[in-house]
Image (cartoon, rainbow, N blue to C red; front, side):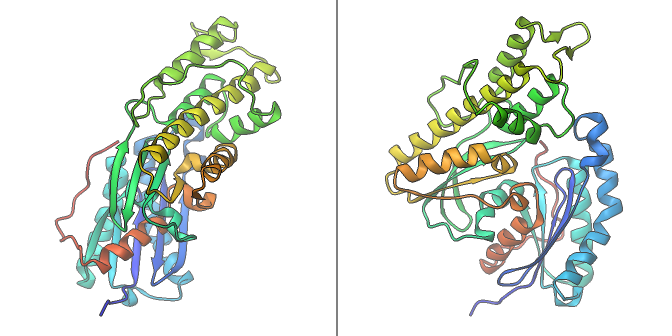
Length: 342
């Protein structure tokens, strides 16, 4: 007989302080976003992120418990992200989680952040097995074959820059405020997502991903068009210059081509695949989501992608993984430590 655990999940791998409660279903999910703290620096500052986690984690956990209408006494398992991520950020969540688990004499589970993303679609949907999962964020871009709960095989992964990083760095080249991804998508939408400049796609025929060349091609193109001062390292285009929108549009088309090519390859080579999931922060991009949905459904497979709330870093996905891991009786001990950093 399976024990139905009540999971308290913590997620502090980067710049979101999040907590969730799960018992058979998601009971609550609370997070504090640090975007405003990092905006003036143009990206995440690890030291600021760590300090903010320390300041916010207790109140976030208390709010998650309150919204789930339960107390700490009702919690039977702590699930906490312990890899990969910013070391200082991870340590905050792991130390807080271990202290709670030890004081309450309950089990703790260290969760791989990427596994959380890979199964984030299950918070709202029930994708069939086996399926292909494309995870795309600022730090990672990976393609997995998923055969069951906790059963996932990496087909390809980031070799240099991740897809989200290509968006972040392009927005920085164009002197846009952080985070620039949503702004780039609006710019691209304004010109209809056309491939104006045909930036080079990776020629690698494997499942791996490489976006550093795309970012560099955009930089040199911007320089050649007189839109970038190499001395000051600042964009010189006017705010209303059509080149901005055309670059944003061409970037979207290139990333979409790369994603689609990898997924098509997987569907050809694994004919037993019944569905594709698209997860991670980049899955908030509606153009990429719609494009992949059309491509996948045209090939007779199902397509699933979480709501934006569960695409970005969140504790709900950590709670779900903690739920099935607890059912499998795969617990860690109180010596749990953080894993490899980004």
